Each structure stands twice: as C-alpha cells, then as structure tokens.
Length: 232
Image (cartoon, rainbow, N blue to C red; front, side, top):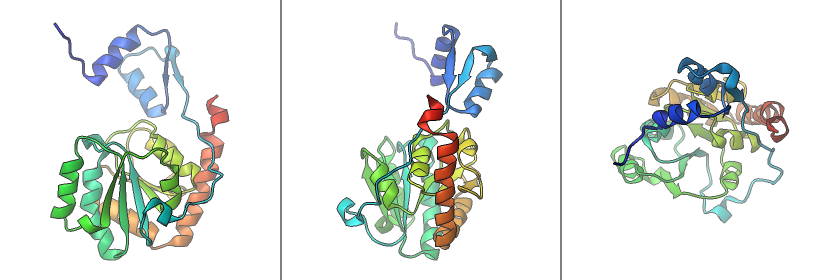
C-alpha cells in the first residue's frame, strides 16, 4: 500500500531519525521545540543574501508599465495569501489610480485568482507574470514587495527584496517579523486583512522619501543580519 504523509507528518518522521536539524527561522525553531524535538539537536542558520550591485533595469525591457509597481513573489497557492492582496487592490487603485500589481509565480490557484481580479474590477491593473528566473530584475524594477502569506518560514523573496533595497509590506506570521523590521525596513500587517494591506501599500506608495529610506534600511539590515558570510 502507498502511505500518504502530511508535510508536518513527514517532518516529524524524518526529524526523529536525524542527528541534527537545521532551521532557517527562529519561528520554525520554536515550533520544533514545541512539537517535542530536543533543542540541543537544533541549529538555527538564517538564509543569506548579497546586496544587488546591478542598477534597476529599464521597465520597457521587462515589458512592465510606468507608474507605481507593487510586486508579490510566490507560488499561487492559498498559503501565500494572494487572494487577500487582490481583495485589497481595489482600495489601492482608488487611492493610486496608476498603480499596477505584478504577481510573479505560478500555481494551482492561478485561474481562480485571475477570475477574482475580474470580480473585483481590477483585472486591467493586475498582471500575472508566471514563473520568472531570476526574480531580481523585477524586484529592482518595482517600488515595493508585498508578502501576504498566511504562514511562512524565511521567504527568499523578502530577503531578495532587501538585497534590492526595496521596502516590504508583509504579514506578521512565522519568520517574517524576524526579517522585516516594522516601521524601519517595511510594514507588518495582520494576516488575511485586505484593509490593512491596502493601507500599508498606499502609505508607502504615497511617500517616496519614506519608501526610499526604508529600502536603504532594508539593505543595511540584510547585510548586517542575513549576509551570505553570516550564513556560512
């Protein structure tokens, strides 16, 4: 017979057989200890990034429009929370009519999310880019990154945004508060809260100086706390 495992079941099964387990966020480390894994067999090693040395590309070369660009990177799956970002987008467009939302990634919910943009009346201002590698040119071309996840470890998209010196609007879940310093390198909001997402996005789009300052602070924080050298 074929045994089916939930992801947490696979983790518990494999961890019991491991001499050591490496986690990339303090939130995951706490979850492991709470699940009964011996803390002396856990190692916390955050992901590492290098600051982007390349200048922002011409948007035309990426076939991107002018005006404010908001980017979200991740699989189009329920846990990544793009539904709530699309629910927030009508309020963003009402405040910033020339803003465009870019969704970079693919997944099982793509058709459903595309349909949702039509129901919300924002299909013309939301672009589904599919999977693109590397993501860095799009991060450099955008004004800010939004990570609307419902649960998260330490997402590389947020670290890459820091490397690109872009501020981040993210949900206060999992390891995100370890990465995004609320009010300094970005804005943290509750999960599944379209109104809070919209307020945070509009607040940053309306204030270029604050956005630039947060981006520079994000680059410094990434270099100080999440560099490749520290990871090694």
